[in-house]
Length: 241
Image (tube, rainbow, N blue to C red; front, side):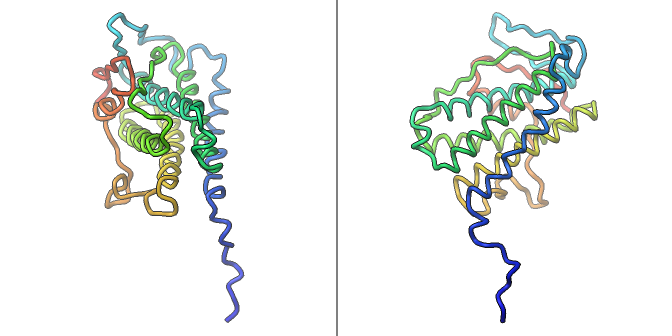
């Protein structure tokens, strides 16, 4: 029997080929952010939810759609700060393979785009910049960094999935859907780096028996994120249904 000439070559499944799907994932959000540049009031109009950093170091995320976007903005600040430190850590180029370096650099770029997009969309409604607390993370350990990245990415996907139904404005829901699709790509990429060519990229610890990714509500997500932020995140005014 003649060989199947339509079968892709083995080299097409190299890690470098697999990570290429991340390369342009952030471009749509970047273009949207550029379109918002110069719009002081963002997508949500003038500041109806003032929130300067209070003396007690507590950040009220706000209420309604503004609160949900600030909730997402807080998480994107956390992820962007994490990957910035990963890439800047001493020994980065020696600790990770070339493919892994490219993945981590792409993730850093995407999270910064997400952070800046949400900040611009919120305009004067945005919460202040948060202060990360990454003291518990050993940035000189590949295993520690990848394990933390897995936690952050899985948490981000679950957060967007849980909060999407709380948004009232359909346009904002569309934007959130675009961001969470990229976050899911991140989660898959990190899981594949940890355990290459396995089924972990869509493991049953995050995908249920119906084929749906997990969804977590803000109280659960904020409890998980709080140890990595020095300010107290107050989500008590966020919508719950």
